[in-house]
Length: 107
Image 1 (cartoon, rainbow, N blue to C red):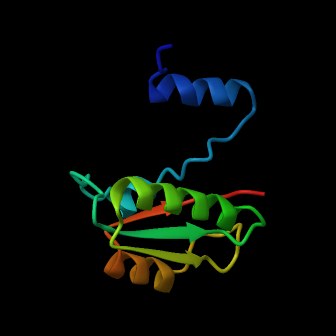
Image 2: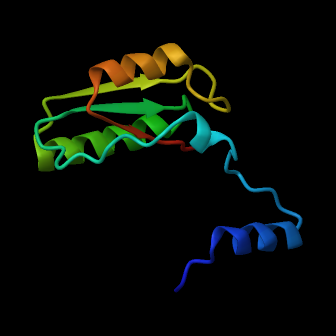
């Protein structure tokens, strides 16, 4: 299955009366972190959204990653409000302590 170019996707969403969930300014504010060669022995962050099953989902992911990649540490935290982005202090703490972060939303 071919993926439609961004312009085609935007037009299709517009035709259906839908808004894109992608923040158009996101790429101007942040750039993606460089890809890690491996997560073996790394410190992983696990950011939940305080919904009922998010912590359960992240715990399972953390256990699988630890089993397969022998994480040095796994740091679990939740953002304050499930419907809002994580606060700067949470992002800064994870960025300073973790090599990578997994985030999840779940009900």
